Length: 305
Ligand code: GYE
Image 1 (cartoon, rainbow, N blue to C red):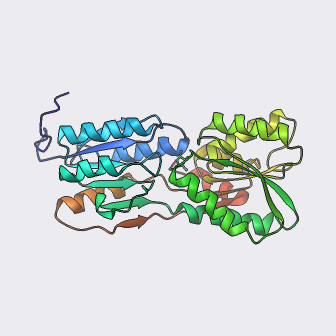
Image 2: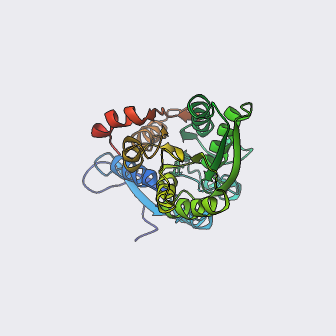
Image 3: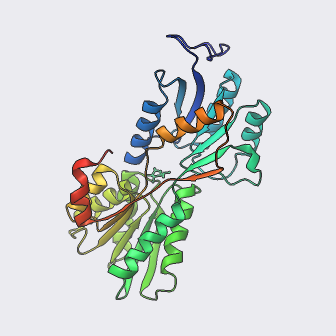
């Protein structure tokens, strides 16, 4: 409300650290859990003054939000870049204003590594690889036709998860990717693209979805086409959100590689470390598990998201 005010003198005693966070959007269950984790970690009680904005999956909205954080003179900027490229100009503006930038969840593609302090998040190539390896061992022991539901075009997780799966399956002649299209990481997108795939291809054996939400959309399309998801058409996906894990436990999805969305506590630690003059590693990789149907049944009762 008062863009000129410095937020380093927080009310309620003690100083707070002002942080501007630009979120990708609210496209998925993963994103909802990630937003919650960040908002619950960067609280007043924890010493933060968080300014949060949702870019609705549009890069221009994120650039605008970052510029406004710079204009407000926040102490730190953190963001999850919707796509990989096109960030140099705005990141240079932040650097010129002496505002350290922290990347959470998704990477940017830049030559200049001085434009951000650290990038914290999962190894998306590895996630795609683990999916591919599971498919090699458990499904592609005979020839299979695979359709791929890609995440948001140009985003780090879509590029890397595609790459990882291809790396793991390229020497397996049984794996044939017959169609690949973006569903934008949404349930609706996954459903619509899967409907098209089903109409064009009578013989689909496996769906590789870059996230659970698109897998859940695909399940609806498969059921509407009179086929049984998890049996007639097998499904593998990435994230491990509640609804995805439930579908896995119910036998509708066959395998999920987790992507941990709970980045808030680490983000808070990173900022506090930087703020007290410390240094952080330029790349912090978070730990991800993987689940088959039996493991999902066991994990569900204590799942945090
Ligand atoms: O997998 C997907 C979300 O960037 C890792 O974005 C994140 C991805 C996540 O929309 O569900």
